[in-house]
Image (cartoon, helix red, strand yellow):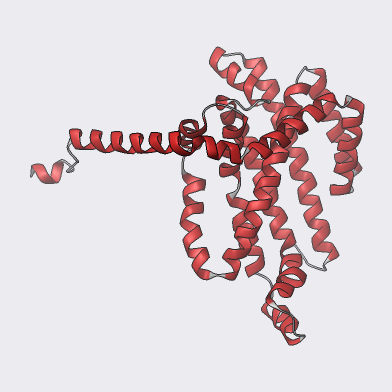
Amino acid sequence: MEFLSKFPVMERTTLMELRKGIDLAFREFSRAYGDGIEAFFDPLLFFLIRLEKLLLATPWPIILLVLGVLAWLGSRSWKLVVGSIIAFMLIGYFGMWKDCMATVAIITVCTIMCIAVGIPIGVLMARSNRVEKAMLPVLDMMQTIPSFVYLIPILMLLGIGKIPGLIAVCIYAIPPVIRLTNLGIREVDKETIEASEAFGATKLQKLRTVQIPLALPTVFAGVNQTIMMALAMVVIASMIGVKGLGVPILRAVLNQYLALGLFNGLAIVALAIIFDRAAQEYGRRIQKHRGLKR
């Protein structure tokens, strides 16, 4: 009866040896390849630092003007333009401008990186059922594993700094753009694809002129979700050296500063709302332009 009441477990010494073996193997891997991996991401670090310096060196009225233009191009809504400018003015007025620009820089770089890597993977998944079956468990793991767990191997491999934080944010944020790119291409009407084949279109031509254009609204929904998840990861990434609005929030949590955490948290919410509304409106415009009904 003891067998039924007590679940059989591995011996404690064996389990400890297994854990030590995994840790030692990863440390050896880090010593052997850590510097090479870090050097591979040096161009990305250079771009991030330059973008952050550019945003901080640019006069704030120009930043607000560019922000308003981008909000208008994305949404064609004066309400969003005015709301975005007011939100950024309040962020600056409450002394969060520098941290906000650092957050905008890392979110911009992460989004570009996720799009550059995620959309091709989503296209491959849509074109091959084998690739889709292989990638789905990986995406499930990336979306369900606790975000703090990402930090352990990245810290062991690369240490503390901007690049480890950037990689952690990208790993956390990239699944939506991959999934929705795959979904958008697979949902393209088969009759439309057959019509393009009847006109002699090659696989590449079908993808470039039919499938991707018709899947763009869904792809932009994935990009939108990627931006939201990147913003959500900023606070956790601040633990390993990522500058921005997450650093004051982390300090507020450690020292129980309610006002500091609240102000910076609301600044992240404002960024999320601005990016979300602009991306949604742009997706709707694409659908309307292509004669699709939401």
